[in-house]
Image 1 (cartoon, one colour):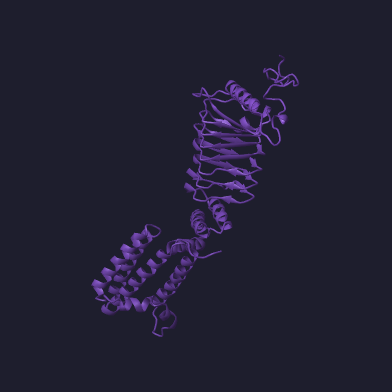
Image 2: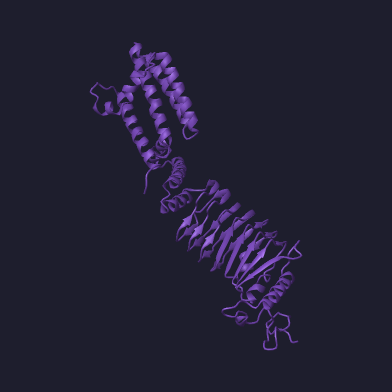
Length: 410
């Protein structure tokens, strides 16, 4: 019999009425409407396709690689190990008219680049392992790409690339990932994705929705990255998660302001940010705001006792300064740490206060902390009490805002 007329194909023609082999021939008459596919033809096709796949692509440790073909446009390559691949390896499937390749539970032991799959319209990797770098760079990717539940043991680099269709990285784990000058024009999914390195999305551009549900990352590289993740959660009305990244965004802004301070700029803006962070973690931690209210009220109550029991002004000033220094040193160092520390410190403050003042019922404390007395009290004020009332009013505001931030609906 004569050989197939397609270039680079040495298979024999399929039948007398065709000049192409069973892989390249037209298959429109293989399906009979109202009946089914021609089983004999399909078995022959799959057998020949497996044979050619083993011949064209180097597959390790698989005498009988699992290969499933769907509707002659999509193929599954299952549990295959690729010790090395060449540029032309997967062009073989393109020649057959295959538009989509699914790698399922496969393993790539060599570095791969986009060029290996540039002739395939859609590529999906599921539960696949990559031992070396994966690099997509300087190309316009017009197809859909998916990495679902994959693990990358080296660098995953996407740069100067445009994704015109959906990109999916769900449940994948990256050791080191880079997105440089990358544009995603359609939806992007990072659901339950783990980033073992610092995540940087500053030079990544998203035109449509991005899903970061339950992502994990070692750290956030900059304020723009935190802002983009926060914005994605806000678009989904996931306010609680958005607030977490809002706090990270504010911390990154604080770092920027610290750099400005070194250059002699934006001192007052830095001061406001610092106070806001220490008081309530940028309106995210209502327990921290409550802790400051309690501790400052204990401090002011103690100072009032000192004022009424000591006659020497120097003694009052020295004792008050020591108390203020101790309280602020402790509070600043435990701010934004474990909430258990807030409770322990509050109990210690109460114990010390009660023992030294005998005010076990917290009479002075209660009158000071009463927000209505702040607004309506007619007692004479000294500068210290005025400063306390201004501070406590600010902290009560932060308490309310923090509670609201974590319970509001958009």
